[in-house]
Amino acid sequence: MTAIRVDASTLRVEFPAWEAMMAGRSQYSVAYAAISRVELLPGWSAEVLGVRSGLVVSGRIKLGTFRHPSGVRRLVAMRRGLPLLRIGLAGQEFDELLLSDVDAPRIHHAIAKEVRR
Image (cartoon, rainbow, N blue to C red; front, side, top):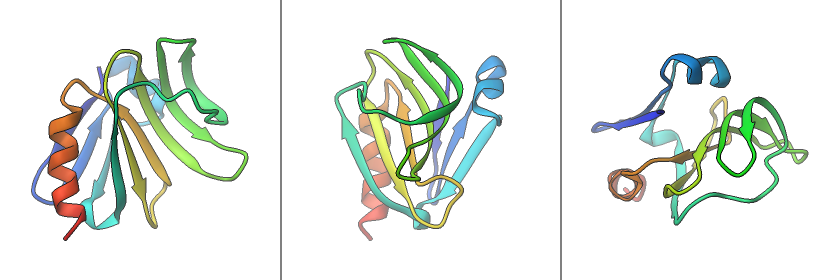
C-alpha cells in the first residue's frame, strides 16, 4: 500500500512494487514550500479525474496519474474506505495529489501547520 511520509520540510509518497508500475514512479517528494493548500476529506472523491495512466478498479481503488480536461494534472492513490488528503501544489510536475491513508488526519495536521507559516 502507498506510504506517505512527512518530516520537517518534505512530504514523500512511496509506491511499493506493483503500485510503482501503475504510478509510473517508486516515489514522489515535494517540499512544504510548494504546497499551496491541504484538505482532509472523509473519503473517496467521486469527481471526474480525467484521462488516466494507471489503474482504476471501479469503486475500490484509483492509482496513477490523471489529467483533467481543464489541464489539472494529478497524482492519485485513492482507496475506498480511507480518509483522503487533497494537496494543492504550485510549480510542480503535478497540480494536485489525492492520497488515501489511514493516518490522513495526522498527516494533514503535520502539513497544515507548515503550510500556514
